[in-house]
Length: 346
Picture 1 (cartoon, rainbow, N blue to C red):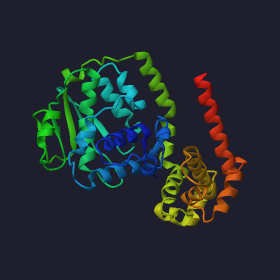
Picture 2 (picture 1 turned 45 degrees about the vertical axis):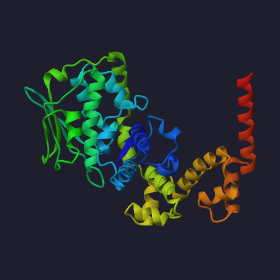
Picture 3 (picture 1 turned 90 degrees about the vertical axis):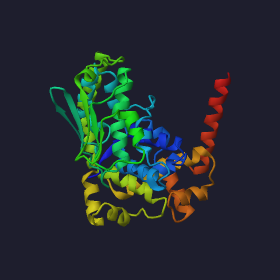
Picture 4 (picture 1 turned 30 degrees about the vertical axis):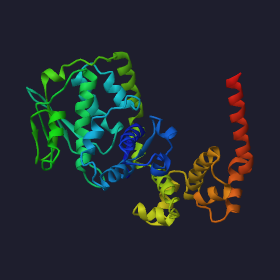
């Protein structure tokens, strides 16, 4: 099964890495999704996309502290459902509990526990990423928790202590700037200890009505989040979109990547009420519209980019999808754009 993350979490990571000059500004070529698609907070995307970004971030080693850089930058314009729930919680204690209860909304590989003591609580991280945990991901998770707590309470939040399951890095001074003096390395697990007085800090933006509405929405939609993880259709669709770039997107190649035989792949897709050819057409239809609207590609280039062996096959497929030729479609798009521009001027 394939774990997923929220589009907001993926886009937030991408934006910081792009700002730091680490990843390309061509987001669709990099992730297989347009910015417009990722702006849909209900969209779930494969967690492998997040891992790809982290791989790129750590490739050259120029910014070994990139996890802390990402965790301490909060873009208030890129908030998903879970972030909204935290924003409208009554205090940090309630926000922390809501975070632990609903973290799958953000990322199904983020596994956290809350342990309560007389002095406060311990937030324990036991993440389960497919490639294993990276130092950068742990840094991002813990520094983001402290950054969010400070932003929500409008107060400098310092934990009693924090722990990291790896050795002290060269840039340890930055840890102390974020977490305070009690930073411990070579621990069994990553954790944050927070005192009761900090947990009692009120959240300035709390709204009980909105919070209850969000909790109702989450109750109704959490099953959909969990179903996304097991949806073979979504996995195949993503692998096809990725494979088209390299020419390795047939059912045999996709089946290998999913660790199953081609026969098993076809059988399981049939159980979901679809088939490989239909998903391939779905991917191509979504991509072709972007190509045509941009008006920067000739049709033979589009045909090749979509994995067609011959332009004639592309033309036939396009006409079956939209009941018109690619040229006619592009002309209609231009006419609509012109009409819209004239109406705005008027």
